[in-house]
Image (cartoon, rainbow over all chains, first blue to last red):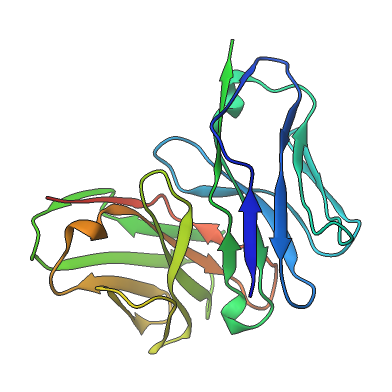
Length: 113
Length: 113
């Protein structure tokens, strides 16, 4: 079946530290991959996406590369800010069945000044 | 531009009471619609999705039901709430003809007491 596995949180970093949140997936076919961010008390916002192998999604200093050979889509940022504190979700889109998204369990990031 | 509205934002209901959460989308037509639940400290679980009026697919057996009486309206219901129904409910939509990502509402925090 289709599934997404993320590294467990919470992750606590100091401001300007380097961030990596690991994400691996299992899927039939060729899924599209996403990272969503959820700020406290809010819904989810799309952070970045990649639609095929070797694509790199980027936004607001965050990057993730679609690695088909390792079935991974790790999220990285070179220098985190306090405002990046949130829960990050990795997801894949199944092409059929209504295009539904399958999410990982989420990783909470806390950035300290 | 497209917007998604979800209400209420917060709800406290006694065990055994009925539930109705509403979600509407503006600025698009014939969207795919989704209901997700986020239990405390856990990831997102897809509950229902709909590809058209009156068409509902259920992902997991549960105490909830969904309906789509109009093209851009998606309702989540229960006849009798259980304590285990507590959680953060998120509605989402996707343009099936354009774009791969889903867009989320602000969510409803449901506490069953």
